[in-house]
Amino acid sequence: MNKYSLTFTLQDEKIIFNLSGKIDSMNVSDLQADFEVIRKKCLNGSIIFNCSGLIYISSAGLRFFLHVQKQEKEKIKLINVSPEVFERFEITGFIEFFNVEKAPREISSLEVQKIGASGGIEVFITNDDLLLKVYPESTDLNEIELERKISHAAFAYGIPTLISYDIVKYQERYGLLYEKLNLKSVAAVMIGKEKFYAAAMGKLLKQIHSFVPNVPEIPRVSELNRTLAQGMSAWLKAEEIDKLIDLINAIHEADTMLYYFFNPENIFVQNDELILINMTNIRIGNPLFDFARAYRPYQRRADFWKNMLHSYFGTGNFKKKERTIEAASLLGMAFLPASHKFFRGKEMEKERIAHAVELARRELFPNVKQIASLFAQYR
Image (cartoon, rainbow, N blue to C red; front, side):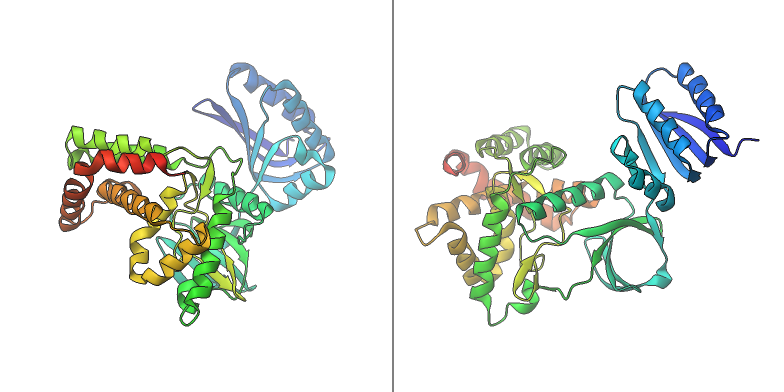
Protein backbone atom coordinates (compact mmCIF):
# COMPACT_ATOMS: atom_id res chain seq x y z
CA MET A 1 0.00 0.00 0.00
CA ASN A 2 1.34 3.44 -0.97
CA LYS A 3 2.25 5.70 1.92
CA TYR A 4 2.09 8.83 -0.21
CA SER A 5 -0.50 10.88 -2.08
CA LEU A 6 0.14 12.78 -5.32
CA THR A 7 -2.43 15.12 -6.87
CA PHE A 8 -2.00 18.13 -9.13
CA THR A 9 -3.58 21.43 -10.14
CA LEU A 10 -2.84 23.82 -13.00
CA GLN A 11 -2.25 27.48 -12.17
CA ASP A 12 -1.32 29.95 -14.92
CA GLU A 13 1.77 28.36 -16.50
CA LYS A 14 2.60 26.19 -13.48
CA ILE A 15 1.85 22.59 -12.54
CA ILE A 16 1.44 22.31 -8.78
CA PHE A 17 1.92 18.77 -7.44
CA ASN A 18 0.49 18.25 -3.96
CA LEU A 19 2.68 15.64 -2.30
CA SER A 20 1.92 14.19 1.14
CA GLY A 21 2.76 11.16 3.30
CA LYS A 22 6.08 9.33 3.30
CA ILE A 23 8.52 8.59 0.46
CA ASP A 24 11.01 5.75 0.81
CA SER A 25 12.61 2.96 -1.23
CA MET A 26 9.43 0.85 -0.98
CA ASN A 27 7.19 3.30 -2.85
CA VAL A 28 9.44 5.67 -4.79
CA SER A 29 9.04 3.68 -8.04
CA ASP A 30 5.24 4.03 -7.82
CA LEU A 31 5.62 7.74 -7.10
CA GLN A 32 7.85 8.20 -10.14
CA ALA A 33 5.38 6.33 -12.37
CA ASP A 34 2.46 8.43 -11.09
CA PHE A 35 4.42 11.62 -11.66
CA GLU A 36 5.36 10.70 -15.23
CA VAL A 37 1.74 9.92 -16.15
CA ILE A 38 0.69 13.40 -15.03
CA ARG A 39 3.69 15.09 -16.65
CA LYS A 40 2.91 13.48 -20.04
CA LYS A 41 -0.61 14.91 -19.86
CA CYS A 42 0.74 18.37 -18.97
CA LEU A 43 3.91 18.83 -20.99
CA ASN A 44 4.08 22.62 -20.63
CA GLY A 45 4.58 24.62 -17.47
CA SER A 46 7.10 24.90 -14.65
CA ILE A 47 6.86 22.44 -11.78
CA ILE A 48 6.07 23.22 -8.15
CA PHE A 49 5.80 20.56 -5.44
CA ASN A 50 3.63 21.60 -2.52
CA CYS A 51 5.11 19.49 0.30
CA SER A 52 2.92 20.73 3.16
CA GLY A 53 1.75 17.16 3.83
CA LEU A 54 5.12 15.44 3.31
CA ILE A 55 6.22 14.08 6.70
CA TYR A 56 9.20 11.88 5.75
CA ILE A 57 11.62 11.43 2.88
CA SER A 58 14.43 8.90 2.50
CA SER A 59 17.50 9.14 0.30
CA ALA A 60 15.52 7.31 -2.39
CA GLY A 61 12.94 10.10 -2.24
CA LEU A 62 15.66 12.71 -2.64
CA ARG A 63 16.88 10.91 -5.74
CA PHE A 64 13.32 11.05 -7.14
CA PHE A 65 13.46 14.86 -7.06
CA LEU A 66 16.91 14.78 -8.64
CA HIS A 67 15.57 12.56 -11.44
CA VAL A 68 12.68 15.00 -12.04
CA GLN A 69 15.09 17.94 -12.12
CA LYS A 70 17.27 16.28 -14.77
CA GLN A 71 14.24 16.06 -17.07
CA GLU A 72 13.30 19.72 -16.66
CA LYS A 73 14.79 22.84 -18.23
CA GLU A 74 13.83 25.09 -15.29
CA LYS A 75 14.72 24.60 -11.65
CA ILE A 76 11.85 22.83 -9.88
CA LYS A 77 10.40 24.44 -6.78
CA LEU A 78 9.48 22.77 -3.48
CA ILE A 79 7.28 24.85 -1.15
CA ASN A 80 5.89 24.45 2.38
CA VAL A 81 8.60 21.96 3.28
CA SER A 82 8.50 20.97 6.97
CA PRO A 83 11.59 21.75 9.09
CA GLU A 84 12.34 18.02 9.41
CA VAL A 85 12.21 17.37 5.66
CA PHE A 86 14.02 20.64 4.93
CA GLU A 87 16.86 19.52 7.23
CA ARG A 88 17.17 16.31 5.21
CA PHE A 89 17.69 18.35 2.04
CA GLU A 90 20.25 20.52 3.83
CA ILE A 91 22.44 17.85 5.42
CA THR A 92 22.64 15.84 2.17
CA GLY A 93 23.46 18.91 0.07
CA PHE A 94 20.46 18.27 -2.20
CA ILE A 95 19.11 21.71 -1.37
CA GLU A 96 21.59 23.15 -3.89
CA PHE A 97 19.82 21.43 -6.79
CA PHE A 98 16.31 22.81 -6.25
CA ASN A 99 14.48 25.91 -5.08
CA VAL A 100 13.34 24.73 -1.63
CA GLU A 101 11.15 26.90 0.64
CA LYS A 102 10.65 25.90 4.26
CA ALA A 103 7.12 26.09 5.71
CA PRO A 104 6.91 29.05 8.10
CA ARG A 105 6.71 28.34 11.81
CA GLU A 106 3.29 29.10 13.35
CA ILE A 107 3.27 31.50 16.32
CA SER A 108 0.16 31.88 18.50
CA SER A 109 -1.07 34.95 20.36
CA LEU A 110 -0.15 33.20 23.63
CA GLU A 111 3.54 33.33 22.63
CA VAL A 112 3.81 37.08 22.08
CA GLN A 113 3.32 40.49 23.67
CA LYS A 114 2.52 43.48 21.45
CA ILE A 115 4.85 46.48 21.87
CA GLY A 116 3.95 48.72 18.94
CA ALA A 117 2.36 49.27 15.54
CA SER A 118 2.94 51.57 12.54
CA GLY A 119 1.57 51.68 8.98
CA GLY A 120 -0.24 48.35 9.32
CA ILE A 121 2.85 46.58 10.70
CA GLU A 122 2.61 45.24 14.28
CA VAL A 123 5.64 44.57 16.48
CA PHE A 124 5.74 41.96 19.25
CA ILE A 125 8.17 40.41 21.72
CA THR A 126 8.01 36.61 21.76
CA ASN A 127 8.25 34.39 24.83
CA ASP A 128 11.74 33.33 23.73
CA ASP A 129 12.75 37.03 23.72
CA LEU A 130 12.82 37.67 19.98
CA LEU A 131 11.42 40.62 18.05
CA LEU A 132 8.51 39.76 15.74
CA LYS A 133 7.42 42.12 12.96
CA VAL A 134 4.01 41.12 11.51
CA TYR A 135 2.85 42.48 8.15
CA PRO A 136 -0.69 43.37 7.04
CA GLU A 137 -2.78 40.47 5.75
CA SER A 138 -2.56 41.78 2.18
CA THR A 139 1.26 41.51 2.17
CA ASP A 140 2.50 38.89 -0.26
CA LEU A 141 5.18 36.44 0.87
CA ASN A 142 7.31 37.51 -2.09
CA GLU A 143 7.39 41.09 -0.72
CA ILE A 144 8.74 39.82 2.59
CA GLU A 145 11.29 37.61 0.86
CA LEU A 146 12.39 40.66 -1.14
CA GLU A 147 12.84 42.67 2.06
CA ARG A 148 15.00 39.90 3.53
CA LYS A 149 17.05 39.73 0.33
CA ILE A 150 17.64 43.49 0.33
CA SER A 151 18.52 43.51 4.05
CA HIS A 152 21.13 40.78 3.59
CA ALA A 153 22.64 42.51 0.55
CA ALA A 154 22.81 45.87 2.38
CA PHE A 155 24.30 44.24 5.50
CA ALA A 156 26.99 42.54 3.40
CA TYR A 157 27.82 45.95 1.93
CA GLY A 158 28.30 47.38 5.44
CA ILE A 159 24.99 49.23 5.89
CA PRO A 160 23.75 48.64 9.47
CA THR A 161 20.53 46.68 9.02
CA LEU A 162 18.63 44.34 11.31
CA ILE A 163 18.87 40.80 9.89
CA SER A 164 15.90 38.47 10.30
CA TYR A 165 16.15 34.89 11.51
CA ASP A 166 13.12 33.44 9.81
CA ILE A 167 9.71 33.98 8.23
CA VAL A 168 6.82 32.88 10.46
CA LYS A 169 3.01 32.95 10.43
CA TYR A 170 0.91 34.75 13.02
CA GLN A 171 -2.90 34.68 12.78
CA GLU A 172 -2.88 34.05 9.01
CA ARG A 173 -0.34 36.84 8.47
CA TYR A 174 3.34 36.59 7.69
CA GLY A 175 6.03 37.98 9.94
CA LEU A 176 9.78 38.15 10.42
CA LEU A 177 11.69 37.16 13.55
CA TYR A 178 14.66 39.25 14.67
CA GLU A 179 17.11 39.28 17.54
CA LYS A 180 15.70 41.48 20.29
CA LEU A 181 17.80 44.62 20.65
CA ASN A 182 17.44 47.60 22.93
CA LEU A 183 16.41 49.91 20.12
CA LYS A 184 14.92 53.39 20.26
CA SER A 185 14.14 55.76 17.40
CA VAL A 186 16.43 58.72 16.72
CA ALA A 187 13.44 60.97 17.48
CA ALA A 188 13.21 59.45 20.97
CA VAL A 189 16.87 60.00 21.89
CA MET A 190 18.01 63.06 19.92
CA ILE A 191 17.02 65.77 22.44
CA GLY A 192 20.22 67.47 23.53
CA LYS A 193 22.22 65.57 20.90
CA GLU A 194 20.57 66.91 17.73
CA LYS A 195 23.85 67.89 16.01
CA PHE A 196 25.42 64.49 16.67
CA TYR A 197 22.45 62.53 15.30
CA ALA A 198 21.97 64.88 12.34
CA ALA A 199 25.58 64.25 11.32
CA ALA A 200 25.21 60.52 11.86
CA MET A 201 22.06 60.41 9.72
CA GLY A 202 23.71 62.40 6.93
CA LYS A 203 26.63 59.97 6.94
CA LEU A 204 24.29 56.95 6.92
CA LEU A 205 22.18 58.34 4.07
CA LYS A 206 25.31 58.95 1.99
CA GLN A 207 26.35 55.35 2.64
CA ILE A 208 22.91 54.11 1.55
CA HIS A 209 23.15 56.17 -1.64
CA SER A 210 26.56 54.69 -2.45
CA PHE A 211 25.04 51.19 -2.57
CA VAL A 212 23.95 49.73 -5.93
CA PRO A 213 22.08 46.52 -5.01
CA ASN A 214 22.05 43.70 -7.53
CA VAL A 215 18.40 42.90 -6.78
CA PRO A 216 16.34 43.34 -9.97
CA GLU A 217 12.99 42.98 -8.14
CA ILE A 218 13.40 46.32 -6.32
CA PRO A 219 10.91 48.86 -7.77
CA ARG A 220 12.32 51.83 -9.66
CA VAL A 221 10.94 55.03 -8.15
CA SER A 222 10.70 56.93 -11.45
CA GLU A 223 8.43 54.23 -12.90
CA LEU A 224 6.29 54.29 -9.77
CA ASN A 225 6.00 58.08 -9.95
CA ARG A 226 4.93 57.96 -13.60
CA THR A 227 2.18 55.54 -12.64
CA LEU A 228 1.06 57.85 -9.83
CA ALA A 229 1.10 60.87 -12.16
CA GLN A 230 -1.16 59.02 -14.61
CA GLY A 231 -3.40 58.17 -11.65
CA MET A 232 -4.11 61.89 -11.12
CA SER A 233 -6.57 61.97 -14.05
CA ALA A 234 -9.51 62.39 -11.65
CA TRP A 235 -8.07 65.67 -10.37
CA LEU A 236 -5.79 67.13 -13.05
CA LYS A 237 -6.13 67.97 -16.73
CA ALA A 238 -4.33 65.84 -19.32
CA GLU A 239 -1.85 68.63 -20.11
CA GLU A 240 -1.08 69.00 -16.39
CA ILE A 241 -0.35 65.27 -16.10
CA ASP A 242 1.97 65.60 -19.11
CA LYS A 243 3.86 68.32 -17.22
CA LEU A 244 4.24 66.02 -14.18
CA ILE A 245 5.68 63.27 -16.37
CA ASP A 246 8.03 65.74 -18.09
CA LEU A 247 9.37 66.75 -14.67
CA ILE A 248 9.79 63.13 -13.58
CA ASN A 249 11.68 62.42 -16.82
CA ALA A 250 13.95 65.43 -16.22
CA ILE A 251 15.44 63.73 -13.13
CA HIS A 252 18.42 61.60 -14.16
CA GLU A 253 18.09 57.86 -13.63
CA ALA A 254 20.41 56.21 -11.12
CA ASP A 255 20.83 52.66 -9.84
CA THR A 256 21.36 53.54 -6.18
CA MET A 257 19.34 52.33 -3.22
CA LEU A 258 16.78 54.72 -1.70
CA TYR A 259 15.45 54.27 1.81
CA TYR A 260 12.35 56.35 0.99
CA PHE A 261 11.31 56.98 4.62
CA PHE A 262 14.51 58.50 5.98
CA ASN A 263 13.42 60.45 9.05
CA PRO A 264 14.18 60.38 12.82
CA GLU A 265 11.04 58.33 13.53
CA ASN A 266 12.09 55.57 11.15
CA ILE A 267 15.82 55.26 11.98
CA PHE A 268 16.76 53.44 15.18
CA VAL A 269 19.65 53.62 17.62
CA GLN A 270 21.56 51.18 19.79
CA ASN A 271 24.55 52.50 21.76
CA ASP A 272 24.64 55.60 19.51
CA GLU A 273 24.85 53.42 16.38
CA LEU A 274 22.14 53.93 13.76
CA ILE A 275 20.32 50.82 12.53
CA LEU A 276 17.76 50.32 9.75
CA ILE A 277 14.98 47.89 10.65
CA ASN A 278 12.37 48.65 8.00
CA MET A 279 13.43 47.74 4.46
CA THR A 280 9.85 47.40 3.18
CA ASN A 281 9.89 50.56 1.07
CA ILE A 282 13.34 50.31 -0.49
CA ARG A 283 13.44 51.75 -4.02
CA ILE A 284 16.01 52.26 -6.78
CA GLY A 285 16.62 55.67 -8.31
CA ASN A 286 18.12 59.14 -8.04
CA PRO A 287 18.96 60.17 -4.43
CA LEU A 288 16.96 63.35 -5.05
CA PHE A 289 13.79 61.30 -4.50
CA ASP A 290 14.92 60.40 -0.95
CA PHE A 291 15.56 64.04 -0.08
CA ALA A 292 12.25 65.11 -1.64
CA ARG A 293 10.23 62.72 0.54
CA ALA A 294 12.12 63.82 3.66
CA TYR A 295 11.97 67.56 2.96
CA ARG A 296 8.57 68.55 4.39
CA PRO A 297 8.68 66.44 7.59
CA TYR A 298 12.12 67.91 8.35
CA GLN A 299 10.84 71.48 8.15
CA ARG A 300 9.74 71.06 11.75
CA ARG A 301 13.42 70.53 12.54
CA ALA A 302 15.16 73.12 10.34
CA ASP A 303 18.50 73.03 12.21
CA PHE A 304 18.54 69.23 12.22
CA TRP A 305 17.87 69.20 8.45
CA LYS A 306 20.68 71.69 7.68
CA ASN A 307 23.18 69.79 9.85
CA MET A 308 22.24 66.55 8.12
CA LEU A 309 22.74 68.13 4.70
CA HIS A 310 26.15 69.49 5.79
CA SER A 311 27.13 65.98 6.83
CA TYR A 312 25.93 64.55 3.51
CA PHE A 313 27.18 67.20 1.05
CA GLY A 314 30.14 68.66 2.96
CA THR A 315 30.73 72.22 4.11
CA GLY A 316 30.31 73.94 0.72
CA ASN A 317 27.38 76.04 -0.44
CA PHE A 318 24.50 73.70 -1.33
CA LYS A 319 21.68 76.25 -1.59
CA LYS A 320 21.02 75.25 -5.21
CA LYS A 321 20.67 71.63 -4.12
CA GLU A 322 18.20 72.74 -1.45
CA ARG A 323 16.13 74.57 -4.08
CA THR A 324 16.16 71.45 -6.22
CA ILE A 325 15.10 69.28 -3.26
CA GLU A 326 12.27 71.72 -2.45
CA ALA A 327 11.08 71.56 -6.08
CA ALA A 328 11.22 67.74 -6.05
CA SER A 329 9.17 67.77 -2.85
CA LEU A 330 6.62 69.98 -4.59
CA LEU A 331 6.48 67.46 -7.45
CA GLY A 332 5.78 64.64 -4.99
CA MET A 333 2.99 66.67 -3.39
CA ALA A 334 1.34 67.04 -6.81
CA PHE A 335 0.46 63.34 -7.07
CA LEU A 336 -0.12 62.77 -3.34
CA PRO A 337 -3.86 62.02 -3.83
CA ALA A 338 -3.05 59.16 -6.25
CA SER A 339 -0.27 57.93 -3.94
CA HIS A 340 -2.67 57.86 -0.98
CA LYS A 341 -5.20 55.82 -2.94
CA PHE A 342 -2.54 53.51 -4.44
CA PHE A 343 -0.80 52.66 -1.15
CA ARG A 344 -3.66 52.94 1.36
CA GLY A 345 -6.54 51.85 -0.82
CA LYS A 346 -8.71 54.88 -0.09
CA GLU A 347 -9.00 58.50 -1.13
CA MET A 348 -7.66 61.42 0.89
CA GLU A 349 -9.95 63.94 2.52
CA LYS A 350 -11.40 66.44 0.01
CA GLU A 351 -9.64 69.37 1.72
CA ARG A 352 -6.22 67.74 1.39
CA ILE A 353 -6.86 66.84 -2.27
CA ALA A 354 -7.93 70.40 -3.01
CA HIS A 355 -4.78 71.72 -1.29
CA ALA A 356 -2.47 69.39 -3.28
CA VAL A 357 -4.08 70.36 -6.60
CA GLU A 358 -4.09 74.08 -5.80
CA LEU A 359 -0.44 73.96 -4.70
CA ALA A 360 0.60 72.26 -7.98
CA ARG A 361 -1.29 74.81 -10.08
CA ARG A 362 0.08 77.75 -8.13
CA GLU A 363 3.75 76.80 -7.61
CA LEU A 364 4.60 73.87 -9.89
CA PHE A 365 2.97 74.15 -13.31
CA PRO A 366 3.81 77.85 -13.92
CA ASN A 367 7.51 77.07 -13.28
CA VAL A 368 7.95 73.79 -15.15
CA LYS A 369 10.86 74.96 -17.33
CA GLN A 370 12.88 76.38 -14.42
CA ILE A 371 12.23 73.29 -12.27
CA ALA A 372 13.10 70.91 -15.11
CA SER A 373 16.39 72.80 -15.53
CA LEU A 374 17.18 72.36 -11.83
CA PHE A 375 16.40 68.62 -12.05
CA ALA A 376 18.56 68.19 -15.16
CA GLN A 377 21.58 69.69 -13.36
CA TYR A 378 21.20 67.57 -10.22
CA ARG A 379 23.70 64.75 -9.95
